[in-house]
Amino acid sequence: MARIRFKNVRHAYPPPKGQEPVYALKEINQVWEDGGAYALLGPSGCGKTTLLNIISGLLTPSEGEILFDGVDVTSQSIAARQIAQVFQFPVVYDTMTVYDNLAFPLRNRKMNESLVKERVEQIADMLDLTTSLKKRAANLTADGKQKISLGRGLVRSDVNAILFDEPLTVIDPHLKWQLRSKLKELHQQIGMTMIYVTHDQVEALTFADKVVVMYDGTVVQVGTPVELFNHPKHTFVGYFIGSPGMNVIPCTVDNGQPVFAKNPLPIAQPVNKDLSGKLEVGVRPEFIDFADEGIPVNIEKVEDLGRYQVLTLKHEQETIKMVLNEDQTIPSENPKIQFNPEQTRVYCDGWVVEEAAHD
Amino acid sequence: MINPKKWLVPTLYILFLMLPIYGLLSMSFKSTNEILGGFSFFPQDFTLDNYKVIFTDPTWYNGYINSIIYVVINTLLSVTVALPAAYAFSRYRFLGDKHLFFWLLTNRMAPPAIFALPFFQLYSAIGFFDTHIAVAIAHCLFNIPLAVWILEGFMSGVPKELDETAYLDGYSFPRFFIRIFIPTIAAGVGVAMFFCFMYSWVELLLAKTLTSVEAKPIAATMTRTASSSGYELGLLAAAGSLTIIPGAVVIYFVRNYIAKGFALGRV
Image (cartoon, rainbow over the protein chains, first blue to last red):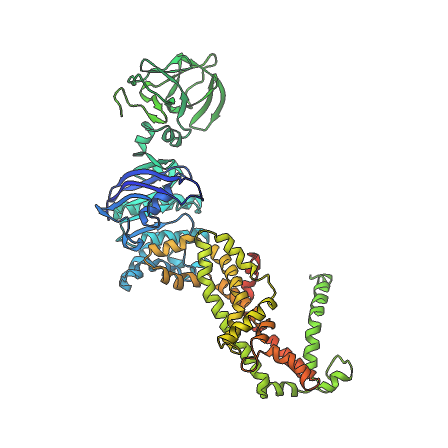
């Protein structure tokens, strides 16, 4: 158990000959509290796996330090860090039985065989592997193997953290849901730090207390699922979380108020007047309503998704999505929309512009 | 229902392949006079004398022992050296790795005759001439690259996460390599050993050049007997029949994995 802290961590993979190194991680300062359930969310190639491998010690960062409870472990060996890691694809020791696979991390730590047995049976029970304990691991199906990988990660109770690198990719959807709730349950039972990498927002939002959103080698926002939904700090967070994602449309700022194609947009608090950079306004499809006055739009498409409808609207060249409850009606003539001022934000170069005062 | 026509072509093909082997086998049960007398499909005067000579005359059975000794040394040596090399090629990127890997293959493209003379001179100079180890080392020239290629294919099929998991589970690299990694690619090791065995077993030129009496291989004994005391065709046929056996025995053990080696395009 430990509080894991990243201090100015940067990492670049060795570049091809004669090229400048490209940083897979650009300057990360981040604290993972002891006992937290974190989800690390981001698109493929944003550095999630690199970050995990740095925690577990499979990679040594190019710059910066990693502290476990204030102790610098940057140069410590993998085994000394006491981290369990589960990878995306099943990793089993083919030559051993399921039981031996699960017992392997414990035996390597010279644990008493009777304790090993107890622990392995407990984990096997949790993962429905009890009946196949005697089988050779090589003969299992892909999801069976992945359960072994998960089990091997969970079997030790003395680890500092368990890292999951998209562990449920190869698992059947119904089982996926079940395993995810088991992980969550286990987390509540033993309170171990868990970091769960995924690019599936549903997975992230159901598993974690705190979601860490990464984009292009940096952590763009850390927060609870509700915070991420209601207060996206970066256009990427708004776009990535929620379905459909946040509308991001170009704007100008006039007198502290955003203007979109000559339509002033009311917002709760005026923004700083002199902003330079690419200015955009972001509003979630859930916070757009039809109104008598507002931005005139054309309705391009209506998708009925049962409990709600997704409308694709067009104003000049910009596409805007909006969500309507099933009982709301679509105006038949000259539809006009309005954004909810409380939920409309101005973004400068991707980052949210805080009210008047600077962030 | 099995269509008899489907069996016709493979049967003919197998018969065609087996014909020379049958000829050899049937000759080995004939006396030399009968062989020279005329062709007969079955031995008219069945005899085991040829085999008796081989198993009692040291110049003959020593040939087999010598061959087996250097082939086994070579197989073990090649695979032992190739395992870490193949691991490096499969897991690490280093300067010139691809070129080096391809260069290994080019070693197999030169005919052994090119190396016969320099090897002969070198081994004579350091007193290795006519020893088993000399032949075993000489054969490494072809077999190590081959083993590296075969093993690299099998190793690259194992995800590198296996290595990482073992480290996380508390294994050091040497322990992981020996206790987990080698058992995981056991099939590949088997295939590599088979091919090393086979190439070393059939190679004649280097083996003959580097030995005279003490380590003379069976194949060399066979070529010499044909000319020394007249024709001993029956004896030669018996020796030939026995030479096929070790290869057949070894391939039996790796029969299930050979196809995988071919599928990887590495054999």
